[in-house]
Image (cartoon, rainbow, N blue to C red):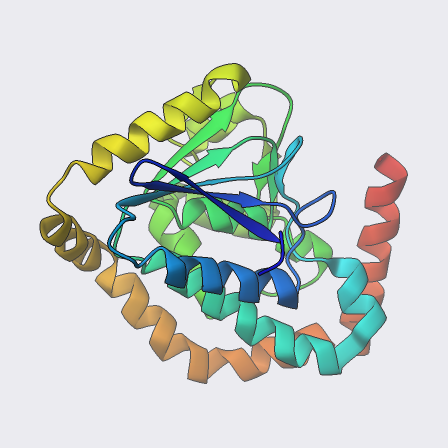
Length: 254
């Protein structure tokens, strides 16, 4: 196992740290590594998960440079792996806490929204889903995660406008559950995980399954209905040009 997703045991809590380059951007390797770590966390010793990023970034979303560089053959392998990883996290039967230590953009926001509780460090980091600003559609799994996590009256504007938010604004939008000081984020996330882990495991798992069952049903029905169409748009030459334009605009900002 590479260091792409590090696993540290803290009592009966598994701390999964994304350690995949500077931005923890999602590529095929990160998706597969996350799935493997989740499988490890099914062992009896693990009662809950805390997910965190490295440095000042939780995750900057999909590695768009890789998408442009490797083209449609890569995209056709990557998108199913991305959906598989997000669905596995969303359906994970044990408590999952996202410790959003920095920017959580696009796929990074979706990763956080798949958790049972989301804490974000106070500061200037931003969170949101600007996929349509990039020029790519949502696969069914990420879209259903956002439908589940976001307030219904906010969902359309979040997806269609693609705005990103500072922590306090994200709290108002319902994208996160709490804003905490950066130095207390690890302990606050651990306390949240331990609190949820103290619930009887079978009762927690069944309740979580019931809460998320409708979303999972829509995901699993939506994939055969929409995955191919989503893939076609991601692979289209016009989309590649839109991604290139977004990369250029974003890197100039940086």
